[in-house]
Structures are given as C-alpha cells and as structure tokens.
Image (tube, rainbow over all chains, first blue to last red; front, side):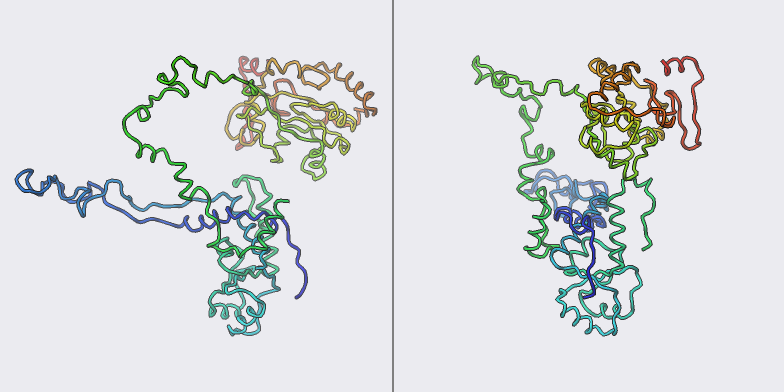
Length: 217
Length: 293
C-alpha cells in the first residue's frame, strides 16, 4: 500500500441511479443495431395472373392466385421492409451521469483499486494471475491507463489470460465497467478522468459554442 | 441524506452486473397491458358503434337513467380555487445571497449595470415566456451579507428590506417591466441576434401593473425621480443607515434605460448583423416615430 487517494464526490458519491445505467447499456447495445430483414411485397413477386384452377367444378376452395398471403410461400402485406437502423444518441447529461454512477457503484462495492502504474517485472501470465488472486481481484479485471500504448509485459500477460483487458481512458464505457468484476486505475488515468468528467458536469454552453474539452493531462 | 441511504444499500447488496439491473416499468407486460397504444385499441375494439364513430354523449348524461335528475357533473358545485391562474404573472426568485455569491466568484461584474441578460448568461435561471413568466424578483434572504454597490434592474420586488439592503451599500435599484416578446430577446441575446430581427420596442405594462411601476416606493421605472429620492431618504431613516455619496461612482454605474429601450446602448428598431459586425438603423421618419414614441 503506497498511500491515500483523494476522490471527488460529484463523481464518486452520486446517487446510485440504476435506471440510468440500464439506459446507457441499452443505448450501447442498440445504437449499432441494423435489422436486415426484408420481405418482398406484392409487386416484387412473380406474375400474379392466372387462377390456379377454375372457379367451379373441382371440389377445392376458390382462389385467384398462387401467391396470396394465406398460401404457403405467399407474399406478406406489412412485413419488414429493408434495413432498419436503431441508431439514436443518448443525451450527453445521461451519458456523463451513467459514467459517474458506474464508478460510484464500483467504489462502494469494493471493486476499484488504484495503482501506481502498469509496469510488471516479467511477461509471464502466471505472475499477473497470482498477483490478482492474492489481492482478491475477481475473475475479470479491467486495467485503465492514460494512453493507448501500454508496457510490453502487461500486454503479453493479459493477452494470454481470459478476462483481463487493457483500456485507455477514452475507451471507458458503462458496459465494460459493469461487465468486468474489478476496475484497476492508474493515478494518471484517475486525474484525466476526473478532469474530463468535471468539465462535462459543470459546463453549460451549447455544443456549438463549447470549446474543445481538455485532452492533455 | 437520500444518497447516503442508497449507498448503504449498495454496500450490503450483491454486486451490480449486466444481468442484475432492474427493467424499467414501461417495458413490463403488466404496464403495457394497462396502458395500450391508440393503434392497439383501434385494432381490438369493434368498428361500429358510438365509440368508433366519435359519437359518445358527454359524461354523466344518460337519458335513460336520468329520468329528470341532473347529471353528476351539474350537481357538484364549482369551487374556483385557482380562478385567474391563466392571467397571473410569475417571477422567478433571486436572493441577495446568490447575488453576493456570484459577485464573489467573479461571475458578475459589479462595476457595470446588472441587467436581465447578465443574470441569464450565468445559466442559473431558465425563464420561459410561454409559461407566463415575466422575469426575476428580488428576495430578501441574505440581506445582512450583501455588501457591494450595484446598479440592479429587476422585474419585481416584494419587500422593503431588499431595497434597503442594496441602497445601504450605495447601490441603485429600479423595477422594470418587459413584455414577452422583448423577454425572449433578452433571455438569449445571441440567439435573438442570429435570427435577424430588428430590436423590438417594449410595451407599456398591463393595467393591473401600472400602479406598481409608477410607485416610487417600489422604485418603478415610470415613477417621478424626485419622489424616488424622497423615498430613499425615508427608507434610510426607517432602517437606520446613512445614504452614501452618489458622486463617487463612475458614469457607467448610473446608466438608465428609456421606457421603450431593452438593451443598454442599443435603440429599438436597429438591426444587428453579427457576421459583418455592423448595425443597420432605419432612416424613414415613419419608423423613427414608431420606435421612439
């Protein structure tokens, strides 16, 4: 244990709104969804002319064409038409609150751990696994660092183990936070996250007037 | 605190995962059965009859069962508790405490006159002219804390304490009426200028407000300036403070608006062009007499 970390209450002690978490996860699942189902309508079927058999005489029911909806292999009147997209964008306030509630949930259920940096002495995956077991980190761990480029050793070790994922700060999302049982943050990642979230929580400009959010740490 | 209790539950309960989150009420079958869509109702109900033909009689009137009795809608007496609510004016409250706090945090400049657009730019108030909101009103919470001289223009004041608190520090208060069209220009000035309309001229207040805005005790903008000076002396004697010298402050501090003017420095009738950074003024005498009347 190296020391004590100060956390901002607007991010790490908000009300645990599980319905906002649900909305965020729904959004993440459905905004990429495209439904490719297509049933050709009446005018895209082969020729509709011709009664299959005469009106009277045969003992069968009376029909006008072979492709009516009641027939097997017939057209569908109000079926799905072409690719439909389920794209929508959740309002920014909800997305920001979703991240804040996900972090509070993890903190108050003892699933967040703060780390100096992600440097390891060896690239053997067993070293990382035993370390995680000794510290009671759950079966799946999410390592969050400042930049995309991670040190070699942790890259090789987490590639071989199931459940360990590496992520830069810009990839943080509610689905990943809740999917992995533990969250491991570096101090540099913490500072960057807090700065960005506080800027988003307290700025009241329109998106057009807003200046670019602070990217550099 | 309700947040503390929620977090207490969180600590004791199971880990929150993707499968543990509660489904919102509107997606459960029970709610959907109780709140069917209009299209579903139409598909289920019969195609004939008074319901489908929009020919139902009004509530409570059944000619067969009435037999000479009044329907219940006419037997219950009328008790108009909220009569006149459609014409009532609303003013959002701003306290002296928030004003002092904004000045201390340097979100408002006390050396320039404080106006409605200045207070709306802090984005702490959302005034909706559609909902019969006519501006801001001053509240006397924090009268002891207030200690900066300001030139304030507000739409309504209900208590003498607030007026006294501002004038004790050497400030100036005026109450001013804005009609809904000029309000929508003042709330979001940048949006209004991007629309490309000439600045409107402010209407006179309605009949039940004229008494208020011509009253020197409320520092109305239509009142006599001599009687306002008298009232300032009277208030100082009543609450026991000395009126500071008015000659110390800059000319910016003592700016006042014409009864038809909305923005400081801009007259009604002018067109502001933000893209080319120009102002267009009308030259025809017709327009000038209209806007300056």
